[in-house]
Length: 115
Length: 112
Image 1: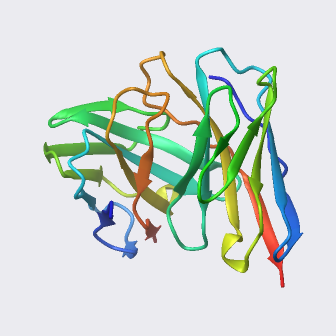
Image 2: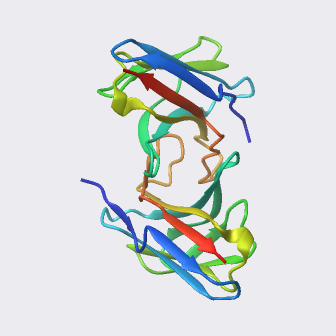
């Protein structure tokens, strides 16, 4: 079975802290994604990566950075957490660059609260 | 990016068919139509996708209008476990973008 795991289901941090969210996939997928999900706004893409050490900005990259040193692992970094980054964070991976039929596999999500 | 429009919520009785509509009037010829669903406290999961023809799999059926400006996800016999938010997404075959545009989806409530 395809599996995407995220390091924490729930996380509470203080304003100004540096926050690391980790995502690991065991399917040898090329592509990995970070989304945030907020009520009434749906899922919004923060960053994605199509290869090791490669990254592209999504729709809302401000305040975030990412790291992909190994194929199976994609990290989302909040350099200085703020209260407006309180959200559900979802990681996903997919096999193929070929966009039309590509299927994304999602992790269970990390609910981050910034106080 | 082409957009989709879905009703905010729908209700169905258990063991009855459910038809979840999606409008995508700005769809281009190369856009695939994808459906995902998100069960409570979980990440989204793939349901089905299609381009022009109707599609069936073990989870659902996808009916695509002839002009492709709308589609319908069909759950043949809704169960309580089908209560979820269902997202209709367009995915461009040739754009070179990785992006799925998730809207706010349709929240399906299944009544026992």
